[in-house]
Image 1: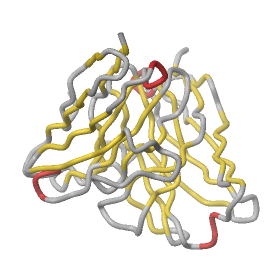
Image 2 (image 1 turned 60 degrees about the vertical axis):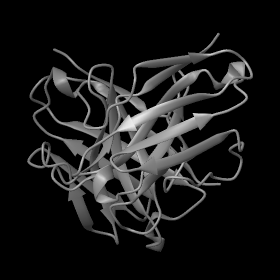
Image 3 (image 1 turned 180 degrees about the vertical axis):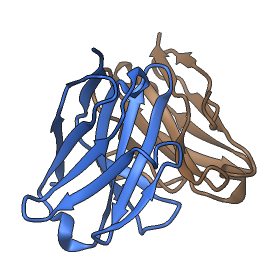
Image 4 (image 1 turned 30 degrees about the vertical axis):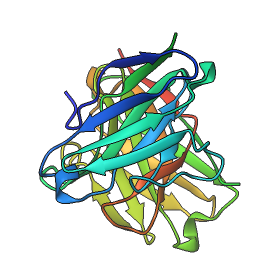
Length: 111
Length: 123
């Protein structure tokens, strides 16, 4: 299993708000390393959605926001849209394993 | 706009060497401004960071693969190469190359990514 733990799936109706959690430990997020978030559609490569915990690349709607506290981080998506259906991954660094690490991914379903 | 494109051996026999290339366009890998990585994805293990190169030769390896993996830059062709030796079925994955975002620190992220290339290890 992944060093960063994410729920396998979340769902919400159009227009609603969902939150995807990413739980780490004292050797990664808890040490203060940044958390980044990616969105991946089937058959395509991941694309960065949030970097440096809270920053959105240009072109990413402000419906997407990131936060971090203690050993966890969260991705919030407001005003859910059908085309938000995708897999979402968190990423950080672990200083015990000495590697960049990813969460196991969360499948978002828009009902 | 920076674009990356992976290519290489799609089918590799067990114990042989996997060789992949990442062609970079819209930017130079020799500018020294960025680092570059290879990442793979499997249904079972998810996303796994493999290796990271910067400043034309400095390399970080995933310790679990260090004895088998190598990365190099060909600045004349503006591409990166990945070699993974002694492959097994566990190395079957989609392999991505990606530019490393931010300064060279542990707080790096990966952006953009190439579309990925499927590698299957099978006899």
